[in-house]
Image 1: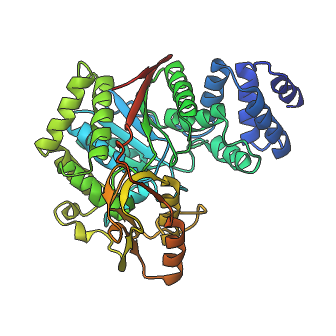
Image 2: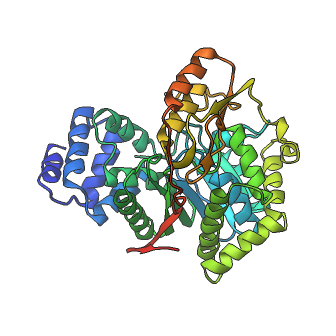
Image 3: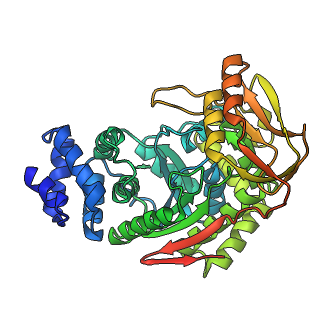
Length: 441
Ligand code: URA
């Protein structure tokens, strides 16, 4: 290990055998944390070549259980978002694509973010079970074209161990390490194709566009090298996606979107990603035809019907679709008023995420319990006109004064208001396919 740290520290490339040695022996407990930390820091400063990153990713994917989806007929696609505030895209996109004939085998990890992850959002639906066995997962995809499963502990154990070290050694924000961490879990989940939604902006992990583009390129490169059809779309996260930020309130917004009455930005993103997925599946000749099919699945209600089938197949109550008041409801709603008149110029997306976490919608540590009923419902977004005293957001709370006051404090100054109207930010920024980033739309 000393020689390999030295080699990486000096900027040399490691062979596949050397990388496998590091990942396997660290996972088995034979390399001490101090040496692995030094190695991660060497990667942080020296980077990794394309082949090294792919080898590292595959070695991580090989460190644990891999899901074999070969008994599901046809091509399977997994979707991943690098995470943002109000991101309920999967809840809308997955049923729409499945309604158009695509096979969605979606595995999601547990989320530490400002609001819950996709799994928490699905689990807001009374009875919905994401702890499927592999057999149930495969059976459901075969039967109805879609299944959502909580990632098991056995998937990529190397990532858990390496991430824990990165977290305490200031090596989280290394593009090769992030890309390997995300893609190892996608490779182990067994799909043939991967669609990545890489967010950029003040509510995203990758704040700068250039970093998001680089991360997208590296992940697409890994996917391609590992034999998976991979496309990334880079999207704006300078304001929450849609209006709802929380868990059950995001499910309600997802249902509205499947009904065709959702927020414009969420609709646009689902249509874009859905069109691209149908293209990868070979179910559309081009992105335009793919998008038309997705729009049709909204108009003819087949996406919503598929969502109900999914809920039923996973033990949930499908009546939430007609009656969203069956979703967990908060105790008390509190209106937040604007202190100024003008036009919304800027939103501190991260602060909205933190405020909703304070209300109880997200976890600070892995074992925190979240309150599925709470969150923040925005009334205004960038470019909207607002009048002093008008409600700009509604806190959905459990009535706890301390939490409400702390969240309010966080929320103050979240909106920057100007006299001049500006245009809303462009949502879809670029598409990245193997070795190519193109400005898009
Ligand atoms: N998400 C992951 O899964 N891994 C990282 O390293 C960063 C974000």
